[in-house]
Length: 279
Image (cartoon, rainbow, N blue to C red; front, side):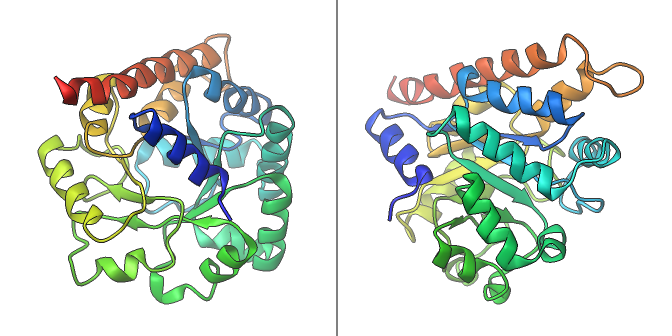
């Protein structure tokens, strides 16, 4: 059965443009502000939304996203509140896919069966769980797939031809290619290397390939989007939120606009990507 993620990539393929995939941390800097940001993302140009599940030890994330998790947790955010955010979002938007991204520990504590049921009921479309390798598929991946959730896996520059089949096995929705080796936001991707990697991956799968980590500007988004099916931007958006806060890390009147304006500019870059490639 096709999911919202499948439908989105199919529609964008017909339109001959890549998806803009945006990441924000649920509950950052507070629940009300986070909900307002989430609601504004599709109108600003986001095609798919990754919603981070706050966790106290986000080992694959750089300082900006770590700080976002801390702000959310200190504001009292929980998994229940994250799922409630998605449920309220779905009351206004029935089309934009939402992928919950994060680590297995909060899901394990919540309870896997309960989490899958509640995520589906809330309107979640897919999961990215960065610390569950293919060898642990029975823990969450297989039950999630059987229930109708996409399970999106990450490939990296160190994922060689021998490892790639295991990464692709049981992956659905799209494959997330991490363009740099390291934590989020630590460096800018090299476009030529990314293009080669995407081409190599596509020789092994018909899944869309979205590329993230290090994409910060419309120009970078356009360059990556020439070859990728999707461009993922997280740290730049989370940093825009942080830069708009007051000295006590509280939202200001500039917070929502800071995110919307950045996403609008990134969307323009992504939409220009294939036109640039055709020239």
